[in-house]
Structures are given as structure tokens and as C-alpha cells.
Image 1: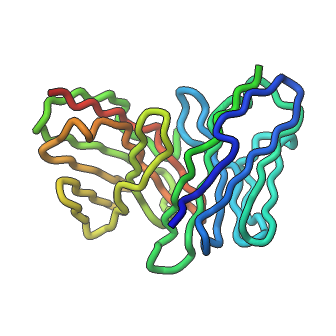
Image 2: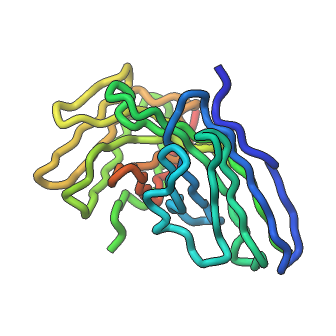
Length: 116
Length: 108
């Protein structure tokens, strides 16, 4: 079956512009996660969805960052008024909440964002 | 102090060597534990879950010591294809907390 799909794979934008990143999770996975990996840095958690609600938004770096999920499936991460420090790879993951799966998260290939 | 700390690396080893990675975590409420592998410019992929009883998958053995909050990964008979960054990962309330990763380079 299909894995986690993210689009676009690469995005180059100018400072101050808004960008939208999309994530399509594995079919049937109820939980969806956004992470960010900056150059030379580890992966950092941004936000987590269970269904359409976000119980944990603690990792969003500022109010320029927001995310939503509709229909319990596709999610979009929006960054407003982008800054150069937003340049990173944005990774989406999804997981099944069945006990057998033990909350294992599967990652998409990511969106590489470059803010000029 | 980072929530998940790993050996800084990089590790450069010959083919056939045995390699050990170590990791400690700070939050005793952490619920589940994993090793992920990340190839250059690719997404992380699950290598194996880690259990208190220890678990083995072919050449790979993982151990968890909850009392000392320590996780390990052992790779035996390393192959060129094992070259990658190995990430120690802890699940806290659903979100994954990643170590900085240890780069492994296996040479012929």
C-alpha cells in the first residue's frame, strides 16, 4: 500500500511569503505528526493530530506556524511570513493506534523548504 | 541537557566489525523506544523497537534498561549497506523525541 505522501518535495520561497505544506498519511492511520529537521540539527517535534484535533501543539516555534487536518486524513502545515530560519526539511509521519502497532510512526519523504 | 543523548560519532569501521551505539534518555515517563535509521537526505525509517527483555533481528540487537534509562544497539558483521545515521528515539505521550544521531560509515 502507499506510504505517507508529502508535497511539494521541494519549495523555494522568498522571505515574507506564506507557504503551505501538505501531508497525506497512510490510509487508516488516525494519528499524524509534523516534525522539522534543520541543517545539522536533529528532528524536532512540531504538532500532533489524533483524528482532526491537535492534543499537542507544543513544538510549533511561533504563531506564524499553524496546522490543520480535515476528514481525519490530509493535513496542511502553514508558515506565514516565512523567515530564513524556517529553512529546513519538514517531515510528516503517521501511525495506527492499534496496540499491535505500538504507536510506530512511519515517515514521508519530507518537504525541503528554502527561504531566500 | 538534551532529552535523548547519543554517542557523538562518527564511527568509521571496516566491514565485518561489530559496532555498538549507546543512548540515554532523561524522562522516566517515556513510554516506548526505538532505533531509526536515516540515510543521507532521506526520511528516517524504523530499524527496530526496543524492549526491556532485549530483542534481536538478524545482525541487530537492541537492549533497554529502564532503571538506568539507557538504550543500546549492537550491529554484528557490519555491511557496507549499514552506513547511515542511527537515531535513538523515545516516545513521550505520542510524540517522538530524537537523539542527534550517530553517523556510521562502514568501509571495505
